[in-house]
Amino acid sequence: MKFSPYITELLQQKVKRELRLSSDCEYLALDIESVTGEHIGVNTLKRLLGFIDDEREPRPSTLDIIARYLDFENWDLLKCFDDKSNSSFSAAEDEIRTIDLPLGQRIKISYLPDRL
Image (cartoon, rainbow, N blue to C red; front, side):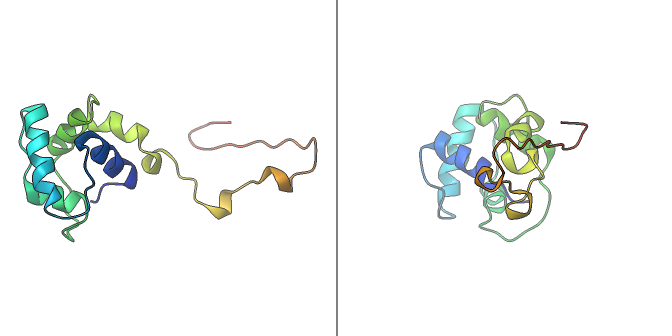
């Protein structure tokens, strides 16, 4: 699993540092521990940020630590705000441009589960 760009951006804002290099994960791990009092391994952060190519799923407790670091109660709540996991809309195929619609035309948009 790799963090979405949204979660990576939240982490960068919180740590007040770009996470461009694998060595930045050491700084992030120390900051997470100082804020939450809980430890996450540097290699775990490297995997989650994509510096190590590994598709292993992290422990739920690790994800909850990340969520608490970002001021969310738990990982499930954080995922609700993650634009990538919160929507199945893809780019161009679901795009509606108002300029392409005739004046006065109405559209209905529905999406799962049972939204209109």
